[in-house]
Length: 485
Ligand SMILES: NC(=O)C1=CN([C@@H]2O[C@H](COP(=O)(O)OP(=O)(O)OC[C@H]3O[C@@H](n4cnc5c(N)ncnc54)[C@H](OP(=O)(O)O)[C@@H]3O)[C@@H](O)[C@H]2O)C=CC1
Ligand SMILES: O=C(O)CCCC(=O)O
Image (cartoon, rainbow, N blue to C red; front, top):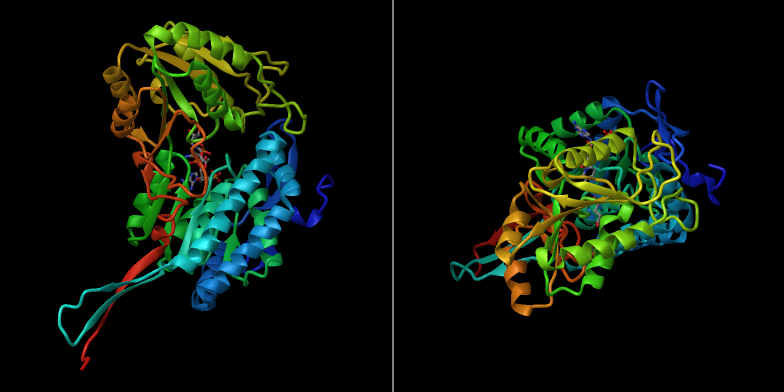
């Protein structure tokens, strides 16, 4: 790609055993820029045989990688982190070209993604075992933690860098090796990470990355008895499918799936803070984030003034190409995403809601959707129960705290939830009552590498990041030492 300072970061081939390789049958698939709908790359369309080879290389590499000291693994991870940070501008450009988010936001993702690598480089050195009080005087009881084995990572298009680093980093820190399948819309960001892993000196076979035939790659991964764990971020239906497939070989799974985040504004809230929190959260990545607000629940006494403030703030957001300096919101990922969002808005309008749209200079058949506020939304509308994944803020009214909690929890999902209140007792009551893995209280930016990211109910299981994030990649082994005099 001519606009990169370092052309080698554009890698359109599969990354297997430290080499960039074409598909066995030389077939390719096209990657598009969602802003222009123009082709930007032809990427190797890997399949079953390439995946099987990658698994074998990952298995072979694990012998050496898992026997390194924690400190040595930590140093490799830090070297990879440093390579990524040194190349963050190019990585951001690559990411924006295939995903569409504004380039400053993309750079934020690169730094965010790298923060997981640094975090787990540090945590690698803190994988402690236990000494258990002995059951007899001639024995000692211990627990050690060991890597779970080869890990499969399947990731989505909305955060093509960070969702991958947040899986690879804990796996490598624990002593596992990985075979990764990025989303077909955004393979280039993932493959560039392979190039930088080579530059960091990470041994061949420790990281393998293949894009191509989703069915062939994923079934080779789930059927393999060598792969002992699968970690997935994406939609709930695919997460359920993969969980079922993994059950056949009793693989461990981590599932980071869909959300339906409520954002509750109580009458005690600082409304201006709530509006800016909502704008930052709702329109991040054009609303295409699993922790983006999906339902805005506002207490009746403040709904009018809150709605007015929200519409004023929303109208200031600038829709545009990722590479224009003043762009706040980029395109959606593809036409079917646009169609889904438009259908949700139409359904709400048919059932009596009113929509207020910010300005757009883009044609209706583009992937650009201007931010929309929906007034008078009600719980019978699809927008209440379905993940929007777009720049639409639907406002629902509630009368009291009990009703707000009931509405918030009225969903099979439970990933993130947010609320604004300045009543300290209410803060504790509501914080404890919300059925979600993560709750933002008077704050809508919950994500960072130090917190346990994950959901409850049909939003998945397992936690990424934080001191808990390594657990999913390790087995606990008991050692009993007997015969002691
Ligand atoms: N929790 C989250 O962060 C995300 C949630 N979503 C939700 O899902 C909706 C649909 O998005 P979509 O991209 O289709 O999400 P998917 O769940 O379909 O895709 C996520 C990843 O899973 C892969 N995948 C898709 N189908 C299968 C399968 N049958 N077996 C194995 N892997 C599979 C995809 O590969 P490929 O790209 O090759 O199809 C991609 O790598 C969004 O509108 C949003 O509501 C989407 C992305 C992320
Ligand atoms: O799964 C997603 O949609 C990405 C989560 C982004 C974050 O870590 O905040």
